[in-house]
Image: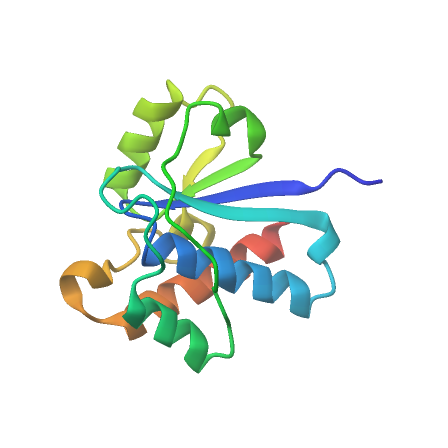
Length: 151
């Protein structure tokens, strides 16, 4: 059996951006017939939303594109996730700082921002503050497609 590439998407609460990225990525690898090559999950840097489902507007945005996220519950990033995943993908610079803190640094260079895989590096729009789930969808979709192309 081939080794799977393990990807963990991370945002502040694990109810908007990171679960959107998790399920978009799962849909993209499925569409490409490459599901067996990947293990994909998501987590939070904070404890605020632990155990909560995906935020309803994020769930609706995924559903608009035919993507489900049933059963997903927010969980917090743990230090041992660093050794369990090949790539830990944060949504913005604040997430990246917190991810490095939780993981005790990034000695293997596994912690990256999602949009750094694209031609327009930067932070993924945070719909928790903007309410603009369309902008977040575009960022997440573009970033996930870029990661898949890179792998």
